[in-house]
Image (cartoon, rainbow, N blue to C red; front, side):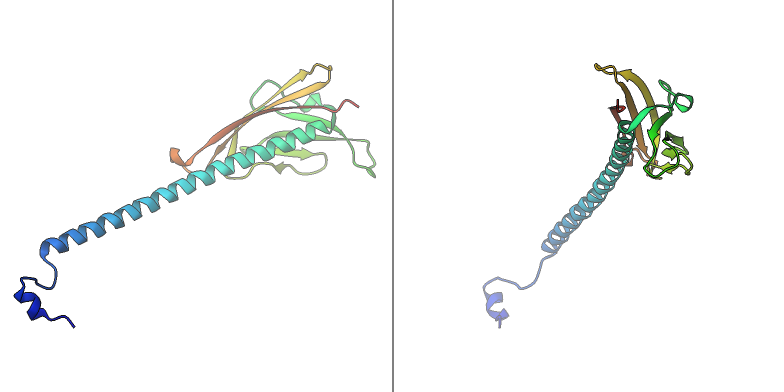
Length: 183
């Protein structure tokens, strides 16, 4: 046990002074403020990273599907294709699956309600991009490569719809090309 009489005789008092109490309160306030500010900053960084990830994932997935479909196609179906114009459209003629009555089938890529869609013959369109993004640039160019095989160049720009705040939006533009199979 502390002998307060002994401390008082030596000029030492037990307890806090008003200045010490104010210093402690100020230090605790500063520490709490820093923790709160850091937490808000982490939440903002997390939201921005989520938006960036979502935009990139949608654009990459759409580009991969388009290049895959182009590579397995026999030719471009000109009546439904729109080249060198935004928004473009691409119609592809493909070999029908084994066991099908037909030998040829068709696939089309186009914009529907701000999404990139794929429509196969006799099926409804499938959205290749999610509802949290929109396609703002969709362009096809026809080219011949060095082997005189037809090639399609794709330009795709995807933007986020997540928020009206600029710090929570993102866009990405991907460009790729794929050769139609030549056999």
